[in-house]
Length: 453
Image (cartoon, rainbow, N blue to C red; front, side):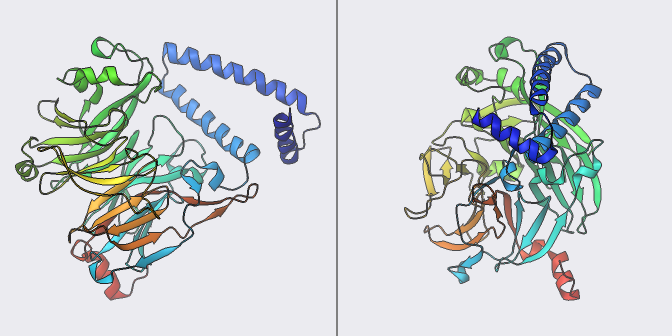
């Protein structure tokens, strides 16, 4: 009863209801109505109009719940804000002469946009776009963030926009110019990652809902999140799409579907990175074919390769990682993976040779300051051989050399205080990538002209 009384007091303070009991009874009945309505619609199908209505109801309910029943800080309402892990703020240089040159593109969950940082942690340019204005229903801007971004040579930027705590995940892929004007958008459930090849084709991960299964997929309880690989041209127009579940079911690795834990509800694969394999890349990695895509599939602890022309899954590796993210193909043919939790409460960045099955290099932090994030996490091999690492939950970027020395760090300067528990929250870092000076000629021109970010 104390829990109900707290809810009652919270709502009475907000809305001044003279009698709270009728309000609770009405809410209880409405909850049961929604429960049975949800069962009906999942059973008999939904139209686009009904889907739009559900999205509107969800957004209104979610916003009302957060405003009325949760602490009044934005941070405590958002999945991608976490209790502060580090008290440091800003940039720290430990081996200045060893820092890989360039600027770091950073996506943080505290806003819809991207920042370009110099070595001192100063913002030299930023992109912002309020995506909620594109929607036919009202949603608070605070629940949007950018998931992944790619910067072009002229300052244009491509980004995944997501709305916190929605299923399927992802709202759209948008392209902006360097002044944050919208060039085009591809509105779909685009999630986690995408890759732009040298010709400008864009390879994305896209979700849907599958309600019926047959054959090798019949053992999977429905409905579940369906997964597709989608290819767009440089103008954002659809070129082709391939279903990932169907390819697994038709592949030599189809028995791996039997290993999906029954405890998982609906999110059976959770692909979280995609890379295009060019002819040059395939030469250094003979286990892969040119014109393929390399995917990280978290729930199977697997990295797979898919032939785009034959639409077939021809290679799978389940290596010494667990719940991995961000599978990168290196110039030497090795894989570099963010291994989230194979060490327990400690993450690591792992370089792995699929040909010899050997672990070549790893970085897991130190005993005093271990690397650890239970969600997200990524890495980038830099031009000088160093590795840029995103410790997402910690709101921390770190650059390390191959001798495991810390070269450079950056900590989020953003904090929110919980009014109720006194907890300090920091936003999760969603993504970061270092760009060299040669890749940012437009920025050099702006600096010469004295243009501020």
